[in-house]
Length: 505
Ligand code: CA
Image 1 (cartoon, helix red, strand yellow):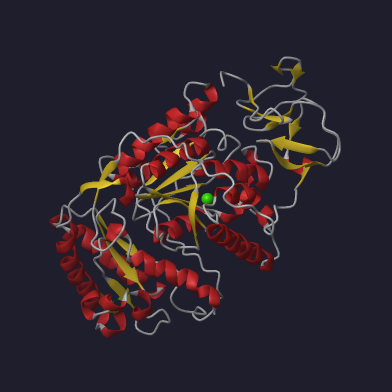
Image 2: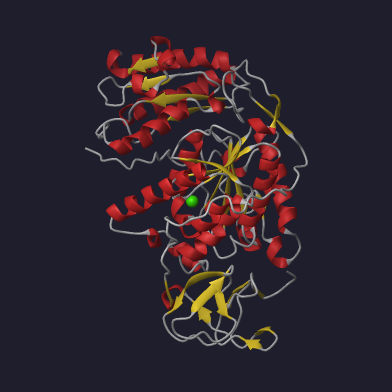
């Protein structure tokens, strides 16, 4: 791409993206001079665009010009009207099944095998599950004590995580959509990083009872403490600490071993995207994803509102009509969910996305989809469902970073790879989050928060394949415990925001 001032993606595009701030009167392409200042990452018209004409980027209609826009002008959000989303009734499935995926440089990693589980753990963690938010205060106090006084005696254990959440009581537990938060919490109990060792704390009068949360064979007194059965705060903390110590002794025996890539599950999402995300970080992530899939790993990508405008492209990559129908089911569910709130997908882009040059959800979606690479979509998961086969999955989740994260975590991912243009210190407590930024300026601003910089793709110093390979290696090193991501090293993590589309009572 060289040191171009602007990047035009497809030759039919009538807009390009500024790679840096450009002053008015600058010749950006031969014969094309800017009529006004163009901030970095924003779009510039490559020719006159008449009123009602389609504005094309990625060869895709981002929207229609509300008015005449002269060549060399800035294109911003209010100048476009949003096109209709692709219909769900006439999609074709399986028309584009990629066969030539890039070979991964290694076929194995070092993880913790879990008996009876298809995927290995990337960390060795005591997860203390909860049936209800009411217990969070007591559990947090106990966990502070466990970390200070008990954990140091079990050096093979990486940490203790209280799995606190806002669900459990004051909820319509029989509402049809309650399946989503309940499934998420049930599947978190089975997360490979917790090693099949089960410990839960409940209150005693909540709606999400232990028999709903835990697998039937695990619902027994040796795994469960109910606070209403304890005599006062002191005894609650003592009981939690004593149970934690027994569990830590078991976890301390876990050891890493060489595992095939088929036992690795990685999640991808983006957050705080800008107009470069779709040119650098997300395609590089897509390249790494293709390598993982080629090596037999399982990869999840998500964020329904951010793929909705490209659903026809995803449909072509679905391996069968059965999988395609699941894709439609999830899209239709989300269309309805938004409709009931009197909004549509146009509610997605944030003020930061717009400052980063993203005019609307179509432009954001085209960039977002790039992180799924080119591999066939082997299956589609409902929110927080666990995969049943290896390969690339579309895992339906909200796009909100701190809601998508827990959904993918519940599906069982061992690492989340997170692409960002604007920057966010987002993290998860139970797995490493590896951050990839879309431009050099963010890496310079946040050198100690961004793990991989895809910015050199803009300046022509690296190719998408170069950064993709770098990211693949970073994933393997981090999954194998030989490296910590910045968020993990600093202990940065967000609250576990479980997606609950059902009513609160
Ligand atoms: Ca997101």
